[in-house]
Image 1 (tube, helix red, strand yellow):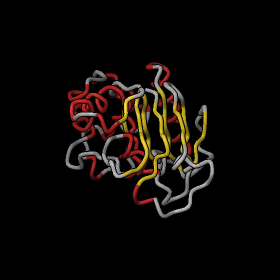
Image 2: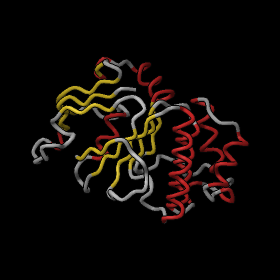
Image 3: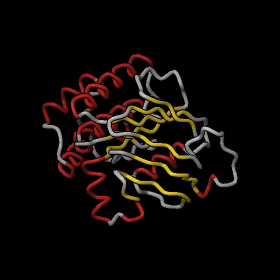
Image 4: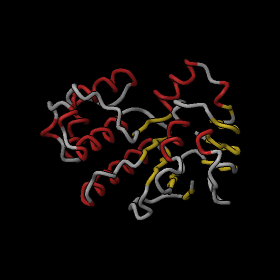
Length: 213
């Protein structure tokens, strides 16, 4: 998935100053398969950036295109295909179903989008240390456990690019390393790209380029 930001400026950020090398109001290209770190302080638009890629908001100036097609030309069916096969997301608010168990959250995703067999999901859950929460409602899990579940869910579906909005904010260093290892393994398996937003420029993940907001 080739992504081009051509002088994008979200409406809520129009009145704020932006650095000369900022993603906003400049032209930036993310090539197919690239690993990209989006590094910015709070309030600079990291979540807005993620929501633009997901088609959840369209209040911006400029042009955003995927594989040379501007997103304002996409139909509902186009967005459905994009979210099922092109992009996978870990949103900052995680978007888990709080009353459903870990297993149910994962199975809903795999049934809708196609993905991992149950044995593989259990193997990954054990690797991330949440296997004992398999039957636990997501809403009563700790934030760190919920983040690991959301990461696992995102990795379980097909994708060309995975977009993760501060996915390690509630994880300690050990669990962050485990999550990064699994993410890198899955991206390599699918020859997929990675876009990671972070407050912490020291996140220990190998990237091809860094973009500031």
